[in-house]
Image 1 (tube, protein in one colour):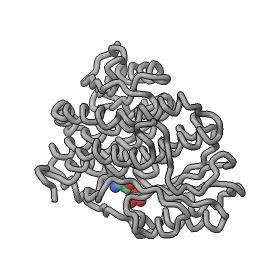
Image 2: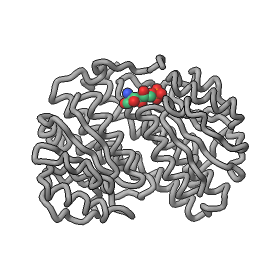
Image 3: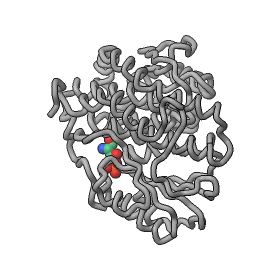
Length: 363
Ligand code: M6R
């Protein structure tokens, strides 16, 4: 039931404050601001490596988590799309944890990757939204996302809930390995706890994103730029736009653009720049200027405290300031809203885009 919404995707975007809060509450003690991962029968302290695996949007959630595990838990991470990983014959360490990320729990390649890791004697964890699924059944530990049923083919609330679970897991790993003390744990869990309220604030600005999307809906090609923990959001933004609006889009690491793709930029190419305030903000802003200088039409996504752009921009979107750690979860919202409204303006079948299925059970 779509309720008062025109599409399941819109409903699912709007459910995020609630389902993220619900998911975080499952993996953290909110009053104490501590993480607590139920049933995780894995010794995070002695792990050699984490292997992350998934497809599409679930893979991008893993890509964000790679930054988190490395930075906060000093834990080496291997990550690949399942369709490559399963055939690579990757050597895996004795004491490794493999995490499979899947909304449906039925994606054939992800399941095959899981079986490979089982043969390689890894601990198997899965982050799934459908708890009675093949991937869940074959895992040693199931870490559910509590997003509720996701009907729209474009993954939205499952993605942000996957990120919420992975964030809690990264904090738990950092703690177990002695890289996160009590104060930092409080700070990071506090940042997670704040998210639902901040996401609601972004949702109240929906009309602004719909107006920008009207301009984007005439584009033939678009680029998304991000850095660090928000680089995967650029990939996710491009995927979301492609799958529902059928506009060609690519995501790039902002610093990589000048190594080739900048040649694509002209006045017909909108470029979404994901640049929350924080460590990589200045560098991303200077990449944005390089794009603007070549005529690219900039849609800047940054925070209230991010400095004013010193180049011409088509749109300057200000999100609430947020802890850098959880910025990919907050910045998923404008990325989803831009894709959704662009598709609505173009009149495509948002919930059932052509050539796609909700769950990809063929290899
Ligand atoms: O069910 P899964 O999470 O395993 O699905 C993986 C991908 O097929 C999925 O995320 C796909 O990329 C979405 N349609 C993206 O919105």
